[in-house]
Length: 353
Image (tube, rainbow, N blue to C red; front, top):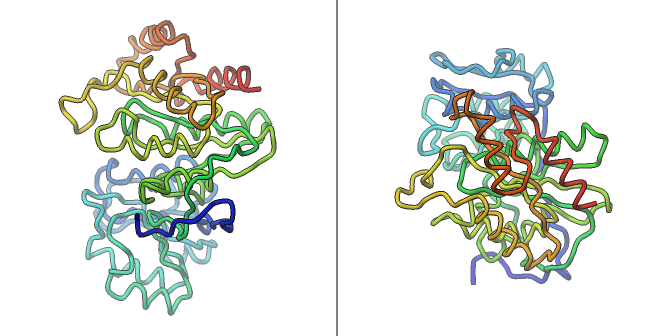
């Protein structure tokens, strides 16, 4: 078995989810391209109310449109965490960032990272945090003693964003749907499963870092019993069709016990990103497989719509593409960042009431 302790969820005490301390100071370092600052930019876009400002080093060409603050000014403004908003290739922390991180830690800020290099391995950072009284928070480290899944039906309602591939908009779709439910006055919570989503939500479960035997159990922890009319809107990971990441997708699907799924897709993507020779599945095939697999833990699972990232489509082709997808699937098909997800939410509430 794996290194995590196998326990029965019938007797296991609740496992604490990771909780971050806001407000945030977003550290964009010296990043020059927006693609390498997606974490910081995503947080600034989806929860600006949690951000007091951004900290940029000389040479930084990325702007999250937050006030530029140094550490002292951010602390005075109430910042409690410095978020590593940069995501460079390889997930490493550059040597010229270390002095700034140490000064922030010594000032009492939590240092929050979703990068691959552990914060504890940065020379001097742990000592600085001990002096300042802050935490070193590794977003990609799951809590200990995750139980195996019980399969017990939980109260409340759940929607899971699934995908035809990785990086097709599952996080943004889930965030959009959760906000639309809240806008309508309905009880709803976005449940994060990836590093950027966790930083946006302030809590969550890094599902891709959980040992595979415990993935479904981790999903159960992420979305516990709730009021009968409450929606948990769960960020998906990977794809059941992905040659590398299908395992985490299936564990999340089973543990979520989704009442509804929304299938996420990027228009015009024909091959799995980074996996030549593996075609992106047909939308209807994707819907059918997720429903088949999801019935293992929720026989009543439904597909309620298709969320399509149309950023690569010319403006004059976008509407026709969405209408064609709607005819093929019989589902509302929208780009949630353009039209909004209202049509999907309407269907979700209609079939899952």
